[in-house]
Image (cartoon, rainbow, N blue to C red; front, side, top):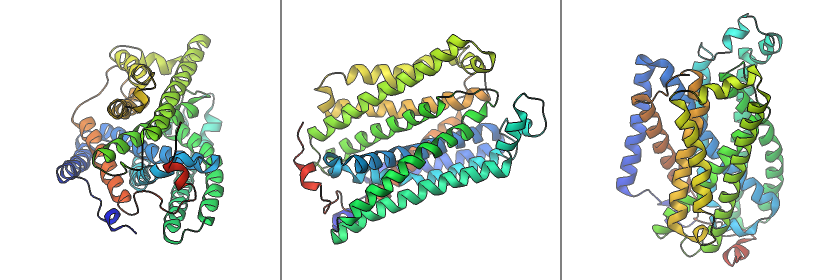
Amino acid sequence: MNPQARTFELPERFRTLTTVFAVIGGAGLLLGAVLAPERAWLNLLLGGHYLLGLALGALFFLAITYVSGAGWCVVLRRVPEALTGTLPVGTLIMVAALLIGVSGLFPWLELTGGAEHHDVGFKTVWFGVPFFLARAAICLVIWLGFARAIIANSRKQDEDGDDDHTRNNIKLSAGFLVLFALSVSVASFDWVMSLEPDWYSTIFAIYYFSGIFVNALATILVLLVWLRWRGILVDMVTEEHLHDLGKLLFGFTTFWMYIWFSQYMLIWYANLSEEVVYFVKRTSGAWEPLFLANMVVNWVVPFFFLLSRGAKRNERVLFRVGVVLMIGHWLDLYIMIFPSFSPTTPPFGLWEVAGALGTIGILFLAFAWQFGKAEYFPKRDPFLAESRHHHQ
């Protein structure tokens, strides 16, 4: 193993800053649990979704590249692999959020407690606390298990150069993609859509997936450009690789917008009382500017800034658009979660700042910890030569 990889660390000032952010986040949410428990819980839930979604989006990227035989991205594989370092922390945060939620904060607890509702029979079974927690545990175990297995094979290949590790990862990735679709759908229903148990959308799971994958692509690009600026992977990751990632990011931001519009347009057109309540909250009062800003930040900005070929090969443009989209995904989750509990005024104060800072700190600390565990690139992957000489 390359000793340089073992000693990878964040720059001292940046490491100190991210550590302070993580401490502020933890301390702020602990204090909020006493002074503003509902707000603290909502921010804990948002942070868990952000970190888990980022890891899952990165793992999904790894899986589709293995299954499709995409050799072009081998040289940058260690970055999405390292982003799965947020999965264990995100799991702990989400477990805490779910356990706190089932103690009395999830709105559907009223339904399962016997309140009158036209779907109460089904929802009493589906949202029984033991079954709810069992589904969460199954999803988390699946994600942790596949991440551990896929990354372990990648590391073993660095040591012995056996191509069987790549073949095993192709098989694991195929299985993961099937279970990913099912488990992320269940998680999006249980952990987000159930915050408004009277509302439902048949394409919400696709909308949730599109957000986490766009955020993963944006974060991969931001980290790759930042590493190149620090002299890491600068001879391995070229404009050609950045261009392909830029095209993926451009395409999937438009896919996100397509799903966003499809969900909104169909609900608006049908005008059914049990469906429109979701958007009535988010387009009323002070929520409306944020609702519109979500569309601008997550689609309008990347669409126009990444439209040209040159922009998709420009490090600075990619970095800035990536940062905007990372913020945009936080806004997207905020709009999914918070109006359920504050339908008139968007709450934003100490608890939200602490939650956002904590998420940023954990993200970079977890990435650095995982990235420093191995070579900066898979040195014995059978597609490495193809990736190093990749051209459009």
